[in-house]
Amino acid sequence: MCIIHQYMKYFIVSDVHSFYKELIEALKKAGYDKRNKDHTIVFLGDLFDRGPGTIELYDFIMSIPKERRILIKGNHEELYQELLYALMPGYRDFHNGTFDTFVQIANAMDPSLDDSSGWIYIAKTVRESPITDFIYSDEWKDYLELDGYILTHGYLPIEDDHIKKDWRNASEKEWHSARWDYPLNHIEEMNNLSSILYGKTLVVGHHGSRYYNNDKSYGIYSGDHLYVIDATTVLSHQVNVLVVEE
Ligand SMILES: [Mn+2]
Image (tube, rainbow, N blue to C red; front, side):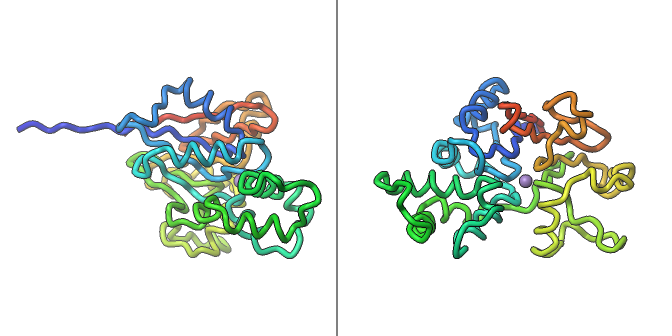
């Protein structure tokens, strides 16, 4: 009998925030090839907002075969959905870069758009864009579980009023909170992650790895049953790529 175990290489990135060039450079260095059937790319949320390359990033994702791209929802994907139907953009939308993402999308849809184009027209144009269909598609997951790893954007919905939750079956509301959460908020649990994670290792983005590296590095933080990969690209101009094979 002959058993062939085909290994898949997962290229995990997070918080690209429309920094397309930085992403492509990092993937090239990591050896990623979208045509390779043994390569799967995983985006841990927060695709857009802050950088200039929203359209290029979207086109790149669409060019990857669907069965070899995995998208995990971040809090910025929620900000996008919330801004679509806002009466006016607010401080939060400017501060987080979501308004700028909308301008980039509306401009790609209608190049005649300029500073005098009002919010109502921008919002309507973005609502009709293919990027909005993509943001609402069923491709988005709350988490991805591999043999040795559990991947999510911010944190898992593990605990509620000190009652341990079955996070695999958490509600949408619980995932909403978890997308804004991060491991440093849960120091006591960090010592016990192995049992919460069934012996697996948690991989998250959302919160800069520099906070875990004592502000000394934007590189991947590697701790006990924990990887934090968000390189705060707006400051570092780097994107971290974690490669796991299984
Ligand atoms: Mn985030």
